[in-house]
Image 1 (tube, rainbow, N blue to C red):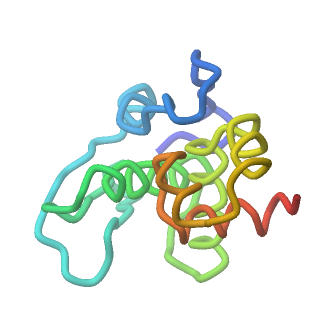
Image 2 (cartoon, rainbow, N blue to C red):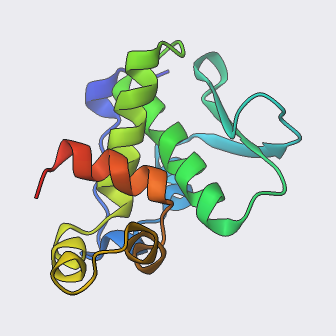
Length: 135
C-alpha cells in the first residue's frame, strides 16, 4: 500500500454530486468488490487495497460506502477504530456534498430529508457534513 501522501486525487468536476468514488478508487488502484456482508455496508482491507461493499444496496448507499472506503485508503487507515470511521464519514461527506449546492438548498428548504435527497446522500451523511461545517 502506498503511503497516504502519495494517494492524492482531485475530482475534475466542480459539482460534489458528480464525484465518482468508484472512479476515484480506480485511480488509486483500489479494487472494489460487492459481496453479501452482514456486519457493515463497507469493509476496507488495507493489506489488499480492496474495499468490499455490501451487495444489494441502493445506489445512494453504494456511493457513500465507496466514498467511505476510498477515505480509509487516502487517510491511511489500517483498522476500524471509531475515530477512523468518523474521519472516513467526514471525508465521504465532503466529497459527495457540494458546499455551494448545500448552501443554496438550506436557504430555501428546512427539511433535512428533502435536502439529503436533493444532494444524493442519506440524512445521516448530511448530519456528518453539517456537524463538520456548521451553517
